[in-house]
Amino acid sequence: MKWSFWIELYIRTHCVARGLRPLTLSAYEDALKQFHEWVRVTLADRPPDQVTARDVLAYLQYLRDVRGNGGSAVNRAVVVLRRFYCAMVAMGYLDHAANPLVGFPSIKAVPRKLPVALSSEQVGRLLAEPEADTVIGLRDRALLALLYGTGIRASECASLRSGQVDFAQLTITVQGKGGHERVIPLNPQLAEVLRMYAQARGPALPTAPFFRSRFGRLLSRGSVYERVRNMGPAQPRRFSALTAPYAAYICNPLGTRWSWPRDHPRSSRSSADHQHADLFACYRRRSSRRGGTSSNQFAAQHRQASACRWTTAIPEDTSDLCKRITASLA
Image (cartoon, rainbow, N blue to C red; front, side):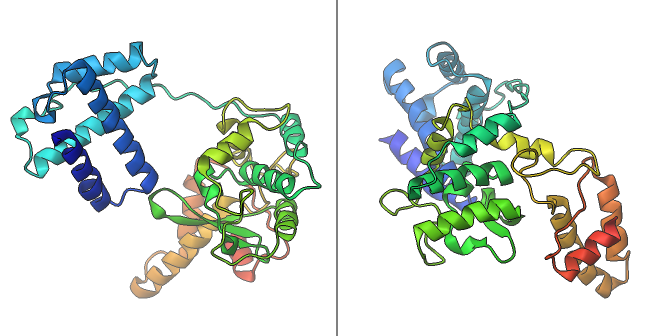
């Protein structure tokens, strides 16, 4: 009873007050319930305020040996348990001395691996695999092209709404982690693929899901993963194999030109240009109040300090403001 109460209290009060997203709340709750299940089976359902650091170490060894979890999963379990017990101490349900994670040794961070990216030929075969004479085929092709051409997360792709796709400005607005929204430019060819699916799908309200299931409902994140993993002879082993080329291509040397989707999935308007446009608008307001460094100079310095190099070409239909910003940053 105490385990259920503590977990519910931690998730519904402490985590919600921190503004965590629903997927994060679900992941935390699953991790704590998994630890409770191990305590119930191994330690005769010992109460949470009687768990010791030795028990936590035994649980981590169980994750490695029995469940076959890697270093990242083990580190995630330690972080969840540490935050859980710290919250119980802060809310007065646990004594500080009884916290099993006090002085718990830090787990060495797992070295990050470079993702395996698909080649241009593999991506071409993958995009050509969905059938173009059905609505579901057009949806799958548009979904794969959007992931490859923008590098957005699976959850962002699944939750995309019709009103967030702007074919006039060639942009999409997605909501990422922490509820932050960002505007991403589209390549004209990618926009045409999305437009073909939207026309075959039929009209929809701005709040309706852009990618629909067979029954007209919102796609889940798992459905997006499934479409990527099970599609075509160029099937990637991991979801990142499709989205990783986006991050690599935008960091190519300045002056390189690509075509989509053969070489470069992204629009000629780079994300750096949009970031500098935001900086320009922000510091123009600041400089008008305090008379500091001009916004053009600040944006230019920011661009020079950037480690990545970006293309600066912009399409002809870009607004005059973006043209002036890009010209001042060149």
